[in-house]
Image (cartoon, rainbow, N blue to C red; front, side, top):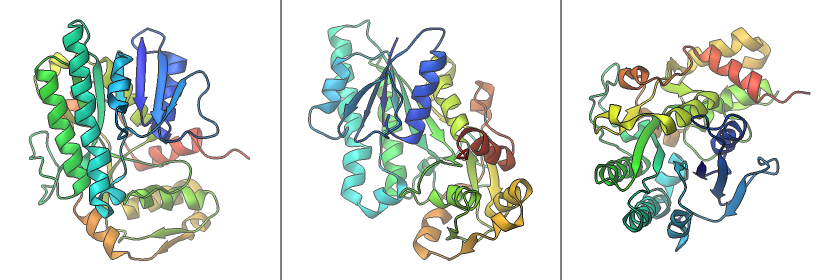
Length: 322
């Protein structure tokens, strides 16, 4: 089985690749190709690496010609960057998905037996307020950021190309993935990881929002599980609704901090420094906070049940061992 991971140099892409190399997919060994603008020094060995931007002319077409069986589409710029640079957000987060789907359609029309599974990492940013206490599977997708709009359009494209039989796609709306290892990124949500990761590593962390802020989280380990489960799911069970709200943990920043205190103590928590940032506050204020992800749960998707478990996953999987 051939798997293509777009965004394969990123944290989730690398974790997914390592999981596929170790465990295969659906009982089969996987020949892994990674595509990204860069790869980390400790990138997984044994996978084919292709450097470049998904937005480069001819790239989607060239990747489609390799005829992967499964495409994990993780490639995008993050929410804060997409909001700050309007043109770049659309150029990276939407247009290449259209080009890729068109290229895959051409491959299908040349070989009608070819219909790859596409797993698209969408986002809870496809939703906009006002919100109920919990967002159900029937809540309207009406994004209020450019990033959310880009993800929502890609969901619709994948659904329509799947309906026509050119691809077999599924869009999974990831919770904010936390605790992310490594350095902060440009995502407006980066601080959710930073206020845990940096203090655990003995460094100060800036908290740019009020500790009453509530949000929806899952661990990188859960993200890998979401992706592999989506790749093997019988999409007939989706009944034409190919975008799913995934399970996660809803908690306030204060509850995050208390979970950190329980696991690491007061001295670690003291390294969190409140410093309000109106730009980040405004972006985060427009995000959904809690979900009733009944469809995904019934289809077998699983996540943590507490933020303490999420921190423990970071400690077990990614905390530097000295």
